[in-house]
Amino acid sequence: MKRAGHLFIALALLLITAAVHLTTPEHATADGKRVAGRPAGLAAPAKKELAQQLVASAENSTLNWHEAYGYIEDISDGQGYTAGVVGFCTGTHDLLTLVERYTRTHPANGLARYLPALREVDGTDSHEGLDPGFTAAWRHEATLAAFRRAQDFERDRVYFDPAVRIAKLDGLGTLGQFIYYDAMVLHGPGTGEHSFHGLRERTLREADPPSEGGDEKAYLDGFLDIRRADMKSGNPDRDTTRVDTAQRRFLDEGNLGLRTPLEWKVYGETYRVP
Image (tube, rainbow, N blue to C red):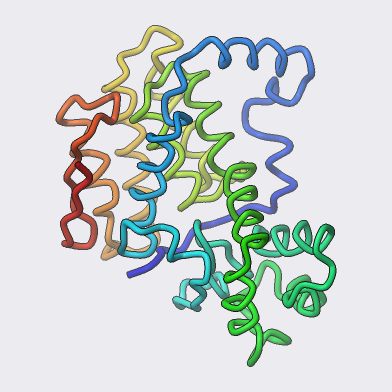
């Protein structure tokens, strides 16, 4: 199992994130100083590598996340093709944005000719204009270091860096930062009810984060409860082991620092990081 479906609000909505003050220069500067004074947490190189392994275990059933650059498949989740290191989707705007940004600096790339079709299918599950050559073009482009770097940059810009930043503002440690990151990847960073920001806002209505004097474990328990229920809302049979036997396990063990060694299960398969 590669990737469950997610609702992704267009990337432009990220600019009007749920916390409105994050978009103002004054608050951005103040928040930047607050984050800069915190421990690196998930952004530390070893922890960031661990985060990619954890995500890859759920997204691509492997710890070798570097294998995922060339991954592309329609998994019949209504999001079109899912591809790359965090499952960029042709139906959820992030794959289009990736190819557009990559084409600005590498105009002769093998994916550029599919941009008109990618714009047409954005927001749908259609393959119109993409088949039969798009998947082969993606796999070929993924053999190039420049495109792999472009995927890393977009992953960090859209998912990793915002998740870690917001988690630190909420007073969360390394595990909490990863929980936010994984939620960003699966649910998308939009402001809709089923997106990351929607899930966070629902949690904040029920529990105080550590930055507001709340208990970190209790807050994360609440976030995972809400996230799990949301995952099940559209399909009661949907697999939630990335929460149940991975993130929840770390939380129940009190491993708020996401210290290694780690052992967890996703889709019934056991993973270990020494």
